[in-house]
Image (tube, rainbow, N blue to C red; front, side, top):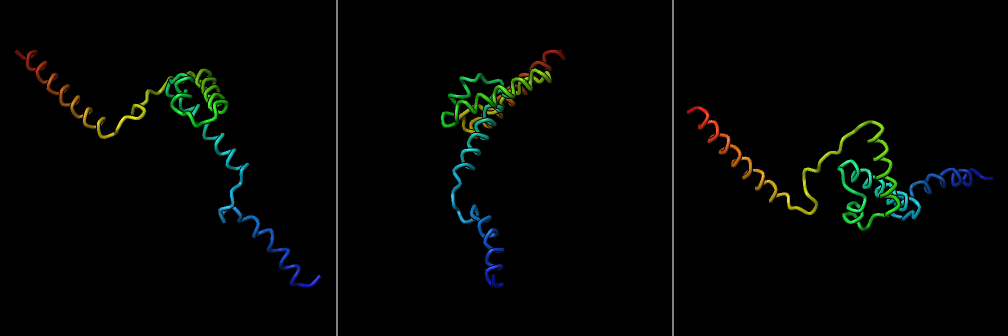
Length: 123
């Protein structure tokens, strides 16, 4: 073997290891990523206290089996460690601007109610 062949053989594995940077799709990697995403979605749904049916309805593109697996894992984990549900702050498909406006309106309404209540108690 010549030196040229040895160099080519040494560089060839390095070139193949960068195939993902060239944009060549790897179906196994994509499938694994989709399953991991679906499991994370199921876990998040359970942590938020959502029923599994709600989770399916809110995430129709996610694989149901993976969503269920993630939901069940989180359910078992939460029971073992006595973790309570975390209530979602933002409703699904609700515009953020509207929530900020309604939050400021409700805050001003509660301030005025507390001010009027404190004024009555002082009299």
